[in-house]
Length: 330
Image 1 (cartoon, rainbow, N blue to C red):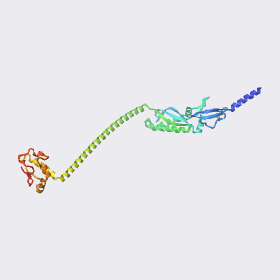
Image 2: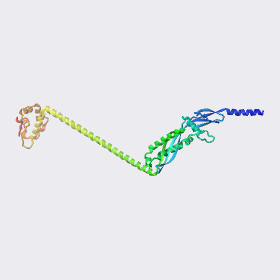
Image 3: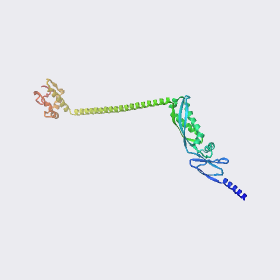
Image 4: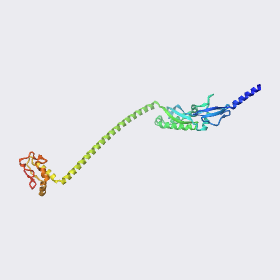
């Protein structure tokens, strides 16, 4: 009876050791089984896997996480610069060999079976990340140069931290300088520079406004010049039209000349008016006898002002006082 009980107990122990259990690898993790002989060769993707006997499933979290660092950097060997930067990393689960290295390198607390991003960062990346800003800023000759080049230097820091992660199980998603604690003298200088820049910008805005106003005034003047030019062109065209009309209607010009001389003859001074066409009496006779001219010179015609203030010696019509010689006397 005793022998049967012992045999049953041994069989139970053997069965327990030989049977396995199903262990999960959740999403956002990779897994690796640790056996009595050491780590298995396979890195497991999310799913469920059987662990036999004393085999144990370990997990490695592959989600990203951000870490902040604060440093004191001696710029140019003289001025102490305080700066803060952040690094966002995640496990490079596409590199199987690096994942194996991560499982084998991280020391876990007793009873823990999960490797978290913080442990990966502190083990593989923290010292590399802290070294980069020092390398970049300490070689600057002075703090003024560091201030002037800070945008370019921040880009260089990001580039170098990303490159440094290539030799680790991590990939850098982002790296940024988040704060500069410049020395007081630099801060004061920056504030003064900002004030000067604001003043310059305000002055520049005023100059732009004045230029805009001047441009508008210039456009108005140019428009006025164009209007005056168009008026002059219109007057010139009108003169040309009048000249053309007069050239085709000499009796109108003749009437106007007679009208002017008639008005002169009505003045208080005694005078003789020599008619300009006296040298060609035939032409004068033809023009004086022109029906249009007769109508214009008629006392009841369109210009009755010729009748006003006439002296007694000018009661006769304007045609009667025109001798053939072209002289007008009174």
